Amino acid sequence: MTRLDPGRLRSRRLGERPGQLPSQLFIHGGRAPTRLSVLCFHPSGLEERDGLQLDELNVLLERGLPLWVRVQGMGNQAMIRSVLDRLGVPEHFQTPLLDLPQRPRVDSSGDMVLAVLHRLSFADTPDRLIGEQIGLLLLPTLLISIEEVPKPSSFPELTHWLSCLDPAPAKEDLDDILHFLIDELLDSLFPLLEQLSELLEQLEEAALMRPKPTLLNRAYTARNTLRDIRGQVWPLRHQIMVLLRQNQRLLGPDALHGFQDMEQRVGLIFEACELVRRQCDSVTEAYMASISNRMNQVMKTLTIVSTIFAPLTFIAGIYGMNFVNMPELQWRFGYAAVVMFMLLVAALQSYWLWRRGWFQDWTTGRR
Image: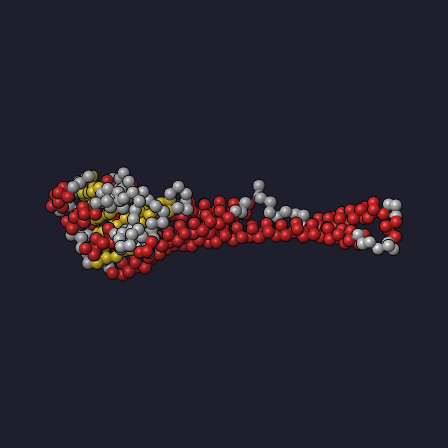
């Protein structure tokens, strides 16, 4: 299996890549092995063929049935290129499907519609994001999907739903399946944003109760994760509008309506990202306010101590002068009187500060 590393959604500069020659990004552990499967849309029903070889794929193509060709794993690049060549995919469409990582895009040319997206998920914590590239290509009688990381089953929920349809999907339904696939990838972003929002709420509460520098670091990490999610959504807003204006012949009325809904869904995701970004700002503001509160509490404590001891120091300084003509120095109970007077002054000052609310601790954690 491919070992996924967080932060792979953004490519690195040439100087930061292993070696000094331009190449694809290094992936620890190698790429996942390639597995080929096909979903045949018979008039009588759906047929799923798994673990196919190129010769078996040629037999299915000769039958002239609409197919959903699913490639999982990018380990065998030569095999994938052979499959794409056999399916009649031009070279300029193969490059965005095979090169990793690619920016999200929705494009069309002639009788082909291309979509490159990422299936996003969290690692052990909600502030560590993992992206798996998925390329989709629609042809007149074919739908091709290439997944970077293989799963036990490719899009199991959609496959099960298609198998339950009566009548079975036909060639005219491939465009609908394309926008269903994109919808599934986009809908998976909402739970991620919800988990990220819950994490930020916990960080904000912790920042108010027990502010620590680690909380601020986690908030910055969550902001970077949100930036990656937002980067997967932002390019699609314009590209989907351009696709709708092109009046692509492969997209029927239902598919066009689906892409219009998709445009609205992208807008909702973008708005949700903005709300979560404000939560990141709220965590930072709560942390700074709490730290400022605690600093004010420390300064207030020091001020109270200084205020109480300032007159006591003044009195002690007066009677510490070694002048001869100081009548209090000759009193028998002069020392006790001065000490009692100093205690009285300290008590009166403490009472006055207490009545004014100076002894109230505003940094006490909430219960």
